[in-house]
Image (cartoon, rainbow, N blue to C red; front, side):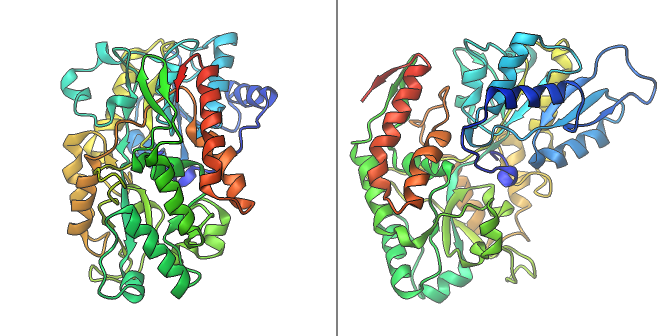
Length: 452
């Protein structure tokens, strides 16, 4: 869950150093971000409180933790995450590295929406993340799926909150109305063809959204496009001319009028009832319980009319999918309370009270022992829960590993490169070269070598 992304919004990467500094100073002085310090009921400890930064989507996690750990001395600080790679977290960590990591002020634990950032914040020039291996049994962390984002140079720099593989979400009512007797698409070619048919016969309805920063993780990642593939230590492959890249771009362009540019966390999505006109959409597992509309179904009133199907097979025939979000629990290497901080992260990431409850977490737990409980809870949530569960299980094991966690944000680059072009009437194909050029520049700026 970026994870879950209901709090996500795209902000162009224009925040100046003075803004970032002001944000840190506000947090440091206990300004509006600080929610409350839950001091021990037996008297305040002489030790500084454990400082935990969390995003709005983790508010239910915090509430459950407070209920089960009422006497812990913790200062909870509401933090936006690093929405779509806007650089906020890097700016804050960089400032603390200059002014000092003061206990009770600087964070001990951070939840971050961006999966690439453990590799950034845990390595040079930051070195700000604690290696969790000495504090966690391998029996625990080895059951955390998606650890490619966290196991970096032999160190375990985070725990992943949930498995955010992409699936094909289909509004079963609209689908049967517009495509009677036809099965949902199983390939990208069929997906685009259905979009062209929808434009021709049912204007005003959509096969998804395209133009939001995370769409690179849906369409490029889901077609094995090698535009962000680590191929060695600090070496990345950026090849927009690959057939896997150009084919998916051309297919999207062929059905572009069938996509809305409004993302699910924009005001237009709600104002224009976009969700009610979404016939299908490629999206993360968590999106099924977080953003899609509900309506009467065989499961009863209020049950989600969306149903999950396996994601389209890549144009090269590979059974792969991308991933949007999931989020990371990280511990500062500067914490004076490493055991307490790691224990909190372990609870948030593995506790069945949190991770098996769809009312608290909308995503499939990354911690595999909690997955069956969460999947069972989907009964009563979806019109066809058994089919949805089967599709989720399939997608969760098919995330393409060639899309790599790197110390730059492809989302931010996509949002600043592709999105403006689309809004100006351009095509995805025409933006690919520029997108790749900006990724190359970001890689080289981070000290990586680039292979085209």
